[in-house]
Picture (cartoon, rainbow, N blue to C red):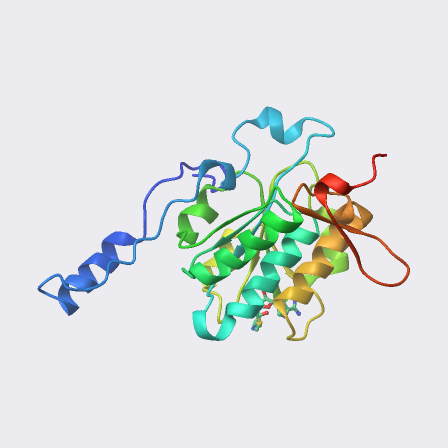
Length: 231
Ligand SMILES: C[S@@+](CC[C@H](N)C(=O)[O-])C[C@H]1O[C@@H](n2cnc3c(N)ncnc32)[C@H](O)[C@@H]1O
């Protein structure tokens, strides 16, 4: 079956549940249930929406392999970079309420719409996503070569890793893109990829929050939303 059209089904639970049962026969193991991604994060449902000229496509970032102690700050930066450069959502396969709370707080104050979900099983998300899947990895093909091939009229899922990314991710994605063939940062890779793909449109999103930052040649100008000068 074509992986782009296959149904979104299954969880990673059964194998894990069997392992838990073996390790904790009295059922005392903490249950780490990964959720199915909400429908809006799984890509456009209808072909109509994906192909309508000028339609606003959704860009979702999938953050794989977050290690709570080590990666809290960098995962938060992945999410804030995604938000600032016009993406719609970040999905984490790991659970970390601190990251989610921090990003939601920024979104409340400085504006959305922007969503973040943690604890989402990545395999069903990748298999069921209706759109283009791009994995950022230093082992991929060079950014300048790949970017022109990425359609701008379909929903997009951009995958960034933390620790080693499972081999199957390379197969499940449509493009493996290297932002330079050297190791660096997922934040830098994401920002450069988004800017290479969308250029100045990356900065075109209107944020609706409690505060708005007024561009200023010098100094810091931040206004409560209600006090913004009317245009
Ligand atoms: C600490 S790095 C791990 C580097 C990893 N060996 C790799 O596959 O790119 C974490 C993440 O940063 C991103 N990254 C790092 N260097 C990159 C590069 N040159 N091009 C694209 N993505 C990169 C990838 O998403 C990677 O999973």
